[in-house]
Image (cartoon, rainbow, N blue to C red):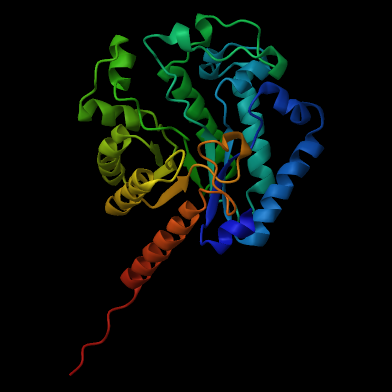
Length: 325
């Protein structure tokens, strides 16, 4: 896969660097050498192909607290087993791979902000899948809050920065929900103002997180992208669009939406963005892109746009031509 991406001029991959379900962390808990040998193979393959990597360490938000035998909210307790497990895995991964030129950044997880302070949180507690290692029941203590996930994110960033002083630290967040400020303060779905939404975006990226993050799928995302870009400029931080793309059959409307996303990334000078998703059989029906399937044209469109962006950057960096007499 890495060689294929490199051939298309795609320079990096964002990927899950841990298991999704608790059961998928079994090898780490029982045979760490074998666990890390598998991750070694990913890192070394990327190095050989000249592909950058953004490992996302805690992809599925409730999994680590399930592993620790604690409720979801214990992500927000610095004395919890969940917090200690997060620190240990962060330390082990970074110490092992911080000298690899393939690693571009360290990411906390995937969209921890979206389940926070939902007005109907009882209906959206983490899934119960005992055969995959989850508890058999959930309670109100499994309803995540912004305070809890921000504490966890700060702790991750502090631990990561302790072992790597130079790489970007990413949240993995989506853009805040359009009602996030009202969810936090009033437990309602009322829509936020631009100022309230921006405050949530910034507060969801506590120091030492060094980059703002979001997604670019929906009309709301396109509407909020200029707000996020403005916040990034105002705080002197880059903005990473960790996922964008269109699902399903690539008919003319779908391709037009994809071009609209690329144009928006261009207009707002987003320095880094990642297509969802390449070579992932689990989403073959709607999202998966490979060289061999019907969604391969997206790779070619990315290759063309990357070539255009690189040429523009090279031209902007070139010294001015000397004046002729």
